[in-house]
Image (cartoon, rainbow, N blue to C red; front, side):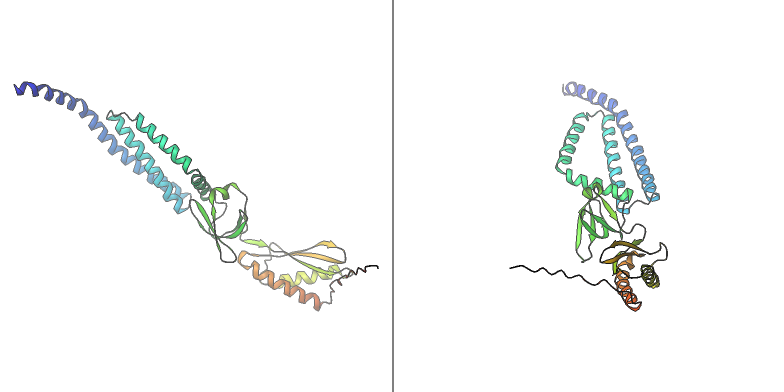
Length: 272
């Protein structure tokens, strides 16, 4: 009696086993082969990024992101092979992704900006840049932020989204910088002599580069003649060079008897 009741269940179980066994075997084979392909593809992408000399932190992040994405796709495909309905699961994941994206849109903007900076390299660690109204030396480029060290030793953290969408002035991209300082001489001075004295003094300074060559240009003529001096130096030498040159040029002009303009005093007398 009990055998007759159990027999239909056993037959149904056997039918289901025969029905799902090929799917199960196919799913296992697909999963194993797919996992090997994902790992192989991830390694190839990592080698390509290393060959392109992308930032190490970006390489690690993108490799992990690609690996996780491919593995999620693999699991969903295996579930489809087993006959599991994944439409609702994908819809839920999509809705959750949208909600997270809206909640973290600022962070995602900074992430995208960080990827653009690390890929296109408008600046690198060690460069002195001007961005978002701040000037400093790049200490670190993170996925979400760029860290600057200011001249007064303060640290500034800039969001990469704003930096990548704004104007970036890289002051050290080519390794040299042009300095400028003004020298004013009397209006009746010998301009050619003054230029020669200034250039000779500037070029005698070991920090000044011979190429590009320094220049001395007239910028204004009124009570006196104002000359703009433009020497070039390595990035690290610019500050000390400018301090040295202004003292040296001033001393050289005095020795050459090149006069400075006499200050004009304006007196206003109030009538009674």
